[in-house]
Image (tube, rainbow, N blue to C red; front, side, top):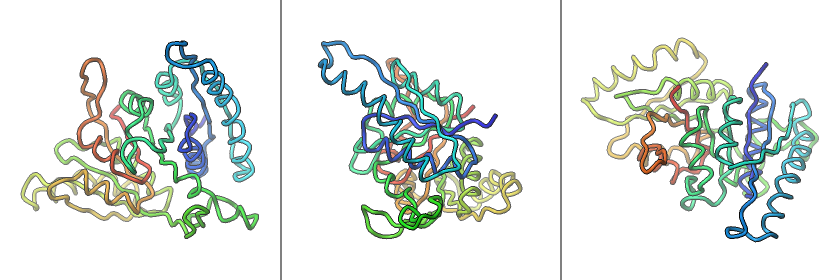
Amino acid sequence: MTRPVTVGMNNTVGSVGAAYWGAREASLRDAPLRLVSAWEWQPYSRASLDSNEMAEQWSRRVPVETAAELRRRYPGLDITTERLTGPPPEMLCRAAAESQLLAIGVGGLGGRTGFLGGSVASATVSVAERPVVLVGSGRRSAERGEGEERGEDASGDEHPDPVIGGPVVAGPVVVGVDLRRPSEEALGFAFEAASLRSARLDVIHGRHRPPARDEEMLQNTLAPWFERYPDVAVREHSAVGKPARELADAGAGAALVVLGLGTRHHRKGVARIGHMNHAVLHRCSAPVAVVPRR
């Protein structure tokens, strides 16, 4: 059975945007789409009775309404909804374990355009064992197809954005590579994503050695993936100084930015994702996939 693309939904605009992104991703992967909401009753000392009831009603209503709209836009897509009860990070990690990937909407979190400011997103990314994609709130309109107005299929690569007003064209997939310890999982995810989108793959790496040595190491790292994905055009770039800034800047026109997640570092019982990943997540405006090592 094909594992689904799962979207974790909460009461943010970015959550619905993630559902649109997830629908297109599931369509690309020929996989089912699973919309899950995780709700936990808050003690009276932390939240009012009204806010608890509103949150519960939202967790029941909005995923179902979103699924109905997505079925209309993607009539051939298998879409299910599920309501989970318990701590959201724990519930989302469980859902991710059964999926190809987990997408989370993060509108308004972190910096002006970045993601990692919400406790649920941060906690989930740091401990999930499957790739987690963080999707900003602007992606809802970007994932709507122009067929919405013409009665055509909604999965095209170029379509108007009702908010911005201009066409949204799929850009390259961008992946960050640490030549000292490259993540095979992140590279595999990035090459697959580029192949599914018929997109170019931009490989960005830091410079730690003489350029000739870096080039040799990079070619050796990428060689197996060139063989596996001969259809993917690759552009390589050496980031001098601050790779996190270069990755975030490259994400401005990208379809997806892919980061590897190495060994988790723990401080006071909280898993951490590394300084560079943290910096990229705070600055990047494109969807960002954080891929853990298995």
